[in-house]
Length: 181
Ligand SMILES: Cc1cc2nc3c(=O)[nH]c(=O)nc-3n(C[C@H](O)[C@H](O)[C@H](O)COP(=O)(O)O)c2cc1C
Picture 1 (tube, protein in one colour):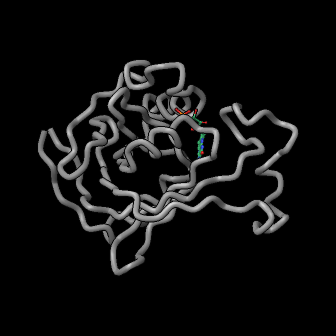
Picture 2 (cartoon, helix red, strand yellow):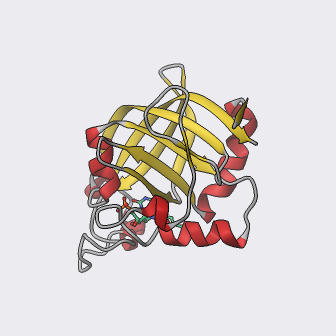
Picture 3 (tube, protein in one colour):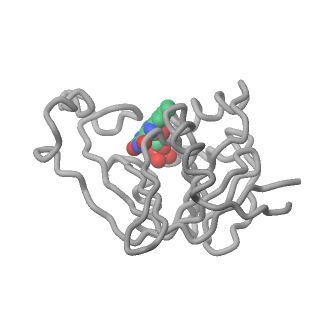
């Protein structure tokens, strides 16, 4: 598998366009590689470094993964096919806590260049990120108009919207490329 390096500024628009349709965030610990669907994220600059911030609810298994090994890849599809959308649906409604989602979704892992968490062949546009800042988003400091994102009568183990706050994980983007055959 080849890697064609890409500039963040050249793919930032693509990432912002693809996010609302769902992309993947992949983590790795000694026990497990896991991937989850994310729809929220921010690409930008802080500390003079390119940064991708992901927003992960407190109850997600992915949070446990990031606490144990604070690195992740962001995996963006080149094309939005029905197969890709099926993976997005699966990885956004099943938890790595109880399942092996990589085999469940039929994904092929590819070793990363700089970090332990792998890239995903089927989602070839890749950011390798090292967490440099973590911050729980205090619900009382969020505009009340977004209260519907945090229903307090829904169990926090639910896979969709629930009462949990998000934790912002700011990852320094240490590599960015497109996987090619
Ligand atoms: C389109 C879509 C976007 C999503 N975006 C996010 C997100 O940005 N943050 C989040 O915490 N959960 C998000 N989810 C929900 C998680 O993907 C879902 O809860 C998943 O099962 C968590 O996996 P895990 O338990 O293996 O970490 C999204 C789900 C879908 C379908």
